[in-house]
Length: 201
Image 1 (cartoon, helix red, strand yellow):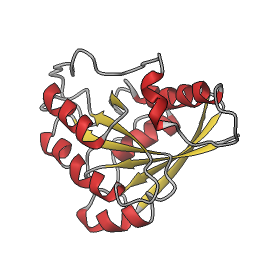
Image 2: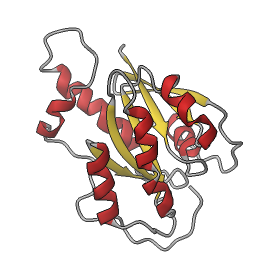
Image 3: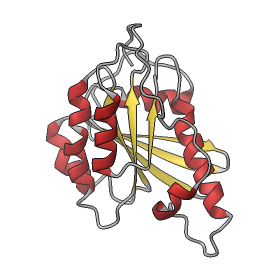
């Protein structure tokens, strides 16, 4: 079974740990200690083994993460809090560390805490998507579970689709051909829903 390294990147306290736990354990854990360095979880989805690295969001770890934990990533999920507009702007800062890698991983953009009051505008999200070259965008809530499983399901479907046309043993994502895929699971076409219900993750 092929294994794929997925790295969650973004500010502190935006719900990366909650998202990782929800995906790997199918439950919501409300209380977390700050991630030190990175934490690891593994899950099998549709015949693929995804190793999820939840990285620290403190500024102190920014350079360390880019040289240690990002290396070898097949996909970097740049995360932001839908209820905190500053975290979306900071995605650009985290992306600078990823650009230092010798081999550029696939980039996806993930908005967390979709159950909370939304502060970011769709136009802002689209602007960041373009700036970081995100191939797909997702919105999710670790608290309710909405949109969480779809992230790895989309990646697994991408891998399956590309495996049908690959003739060698490469297990890497073919970023250039992603736009040619016909499937879309949670691509934001009509904007982020303006939900008013309060929540934490």
